[in-house]
Image 1 (cartoon, rainbow, N blue to C red):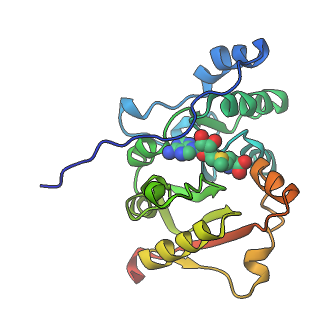
Image 2 (cartoon, rainbow, N blue to C red):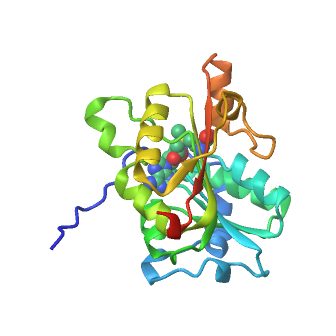
Length: 232
Ligand SMILES: C[S@@+](CC[C@H](N)C(=O)[O-])C[C@H]1O[C@@H](n2cnc3c(N)ncnc32)[C@H](O)[C@@H]1O
C-alpha cells in the first residue's frame, strides 16, 4: 500500500498589513467566490452562475494580473485561480471588484487538494506562471513542477488542453522541460526559438515577469498540449 506523505505548503502566507478596503474584500467578496475542496469533489462548471464554454485554471496567480486579464478577455470561460498568499489574493479581489468580473472563482490556499478534487478531463487550460523556483538543491522537492503534480495536472486536463508555464530561472526552465516532456502526457509546442522567447499576444504579462524584465532577466514561455489519452 502506498504511504501518503503529508503535503507542506512552503512560502509566505502573509505580507504587509492590509489596507482596510482590501481587508473588507477578503471578508466580504472572497466568501462569495471561494472554493472549498475539503467539502468533496468539485464540479468546475457548476461554480459559475453562467453556462461556461470551458474552465481554465491558474495556480499561484500572485496579484491576479494575468488571471483577471484573461477573465476580461474571455467572458465565456470560467476561471479558477489558486493562491495562498493573502496579500496577492486581496489584490486580485480588488481587480475582480473594480472590473465587476463574474467569471472568476478563487481557492485561497494550496492548489493541490483542489486539483485532486476536480474531475478527470475537466480543465481546458492550465497556467503556472513564474512559480517559486526554489533554487537551492535541497529545496527542489518544493517545486510545483514534479512528477506527482504533473500526474495530477494530466488527469484533470482534457485531451488537447494547453499547459502554459513561464520562468526567468533557466535552471527551473530546464527542470520544467525535463519533467514535462519526460512525463509522456504533454507535447511541447515550440517549433523554433521565437516560440519560447516571445510571449504570445493572448498571454498577458504577470507582475513577476515585469519585475524580471526590469532586472534585465530573460523570460522563457512554455506551451504544452495534453496528448490524447488514446495516443499515450
Ligand atoms: C513567484 S510568485 C509568481 C506570482 C505570479 N504568477 C506572477 O507571475 O506574478 C509564485 C506564487 O505562487 C504561489 N504558490 C506557490 N505554491 C502554491 C500552491 N501550491 N498553491 C497555490 N499557490 C501557490 C505563491 O504564494 C506565490 O504567490
